[in-house]
Image (tube, rainbow, N blue to C red):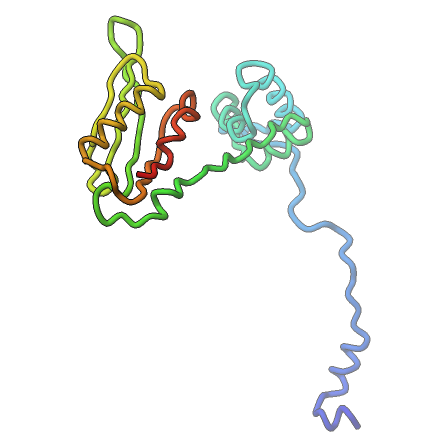
Length: 207
């Protein structure tokens, strides 16, 4: 009666009722052939390829991952092999290199979070190195830049560049811009860590 009301054939109902899903007896995917082929058509067994891998990592390729080992197998042994198979063989041999950790970068938030409309709102300090040819030593270039027009207000060049030289450069900048009684000025420092801790006075300047 219900089947007639719903207009469903009896064969469809009993087919669904008696239907059973048969569990698969075999795994999906193509089974591994157990060998690879060289460029001239010769078959090389996986066990032989494992010996190649062990031989490679015991020599100059000791620091190689499975991707570089794949390239070496192709060049040195003329194998037609992909990186997935090399990864599987390295995993079976337990010779996989540990995965490198991704370095987390810290974005420059200070300059990007400020809208610069005129000069002397935001300064940026930078330190660079230069090599003196013939004297086998370095010089330092410390400069302070106005972010508004990207002009270098003042700079210091010398064999030493510490907190003393940085403060002297900053004082010259203040004199050039005649900044004596103005709103708070922010300066961002991009410099060497050896004297960053001594430049806290420049990180935020209240004038």
